[in-house]
Image 1 (cartoon, rainbow, N blue to C red):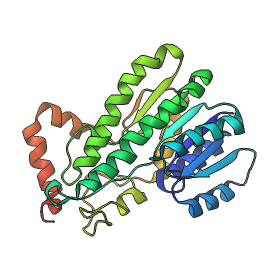
Image 2 (image 1 turned 60 degrees about the vertical axis):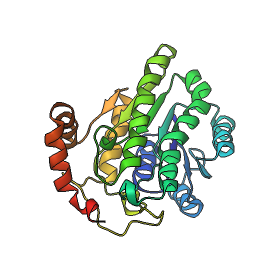
Image 3 (image 1 turned 180 degrees about the vertical axis):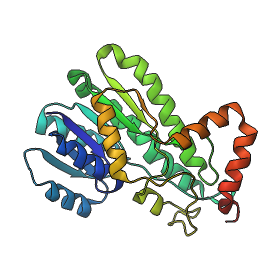
Length: 262
């Protein structure tokens, strides 16, 4: 039985991952900023011996340290850390309060980095795994999501370097690059004023379910794969961006034109 810590575990992909790891027979430690929903999820799994939950804000340094200590006290080890919690925005740079950029970077970049650093001693003891839920937006520009692209790009680079630095300790890093999933992260996307965005979501390719994505991630974690690119269309887009950037930008501007109208 593995001990798995999942951030953003009360809804969307985080909740799907919690169910998938739990179904595999693992013990799961769930954390989320939504305390009421997190309590419901803890009860839904129904096995106090294999489920623990701690509500809090992972951008808070004291909470992160307390969370890692809770894992140590409750289970004595940590085999897998899943950096899943995230937030996005749909707003043009010129129409966005810089505080929105700060919030996106804090949740999507700084929090997972600091939480991972706090958890490294436990992960080293277990020769464990770090799973990072990135985005294809971290590989290629997307209109209206400048801070999200920046945060996910920073996440990618940080953990690719960390992979090289900790592999001799037996720690594995899995970077996951979903495209468009039917999860609350987009429904709760911030607008330029920091309130929920009002315009419709732009996308390309097929909308996938959180359960579908969770199954692929759990399998990739078990196989200790380094990367997971589940959506071939988005993977092709990232290649096009590198090989023919002018063509990629023309297509992206057309597909995400609604962002320019805001």
